Length: 106
Image (spheres, rainbow, N blue to C red):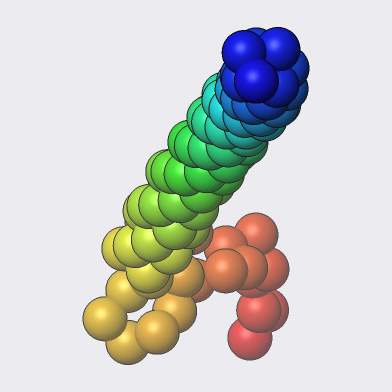
């Protein structure tokens, strides 16, 4: 009778130990998987943030260049308009007459 109790107790202890070891292994695997997933997600988020920052910087640079080009074009147009006279003729430096060297003989 005592031998049966010892055998049953040993079998139960063995099953419990196997179950505990399996559960511990599963928990360790799940923890490693979670850690790896968190690391991968952090890396992906960092890459996305870096890409977004680069895109924003490129957009800012392009916008600044476009603003500078627009300002240069506006200044050139204003200077070109300022050179014209009120009646639409260009100023030639000789009173608005383009051909000063032509003398009509009467």
